[in-house]
Length: 179
Image (cartoon, rainbow, N blue to C red; front, side, top):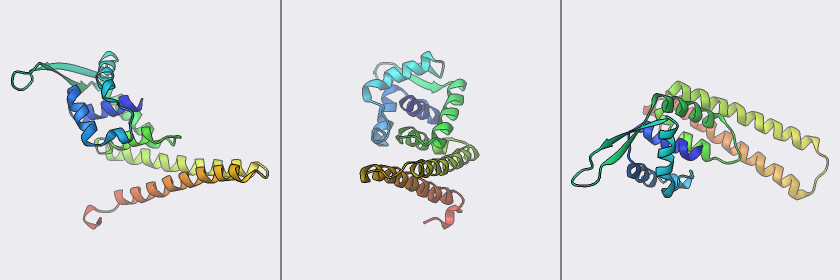
């Protein structure tokens, strides 16, 4: 779903044609953190339309170019986007693609909804750290490389938690006092 979520998020931001989606993906460097391939953009747009999550309007292209298919999210598409985006913000997963895709759309969410999702993520990170520490305490002596694997995962979770705590503190800081 991250690729579809990324494209749907761009449509929530503004109605776009396929080339417009590609241009924004390139301008924002989105391929560094999401799996939207150039060749899949039109396929994703068609899927969104087929699923009733986006609508299409045929509009004339500037000059004498071909007509363009301008895509916009439907009400159902917006609802799904909010649900999937807030879930991705709150969920701690093995990869960050879903989170980063959702985070890229943070300004489009209601601030209270976004804050609630990020606070759920913080609670999920805390629960993940506690569960990992419990799991490690339940195994006996292990080879150093196994202990290092637990340490790697713990460090990754702690780093994600520290980053999130810092980011959440910027949300509560008045804009004029931020650096």
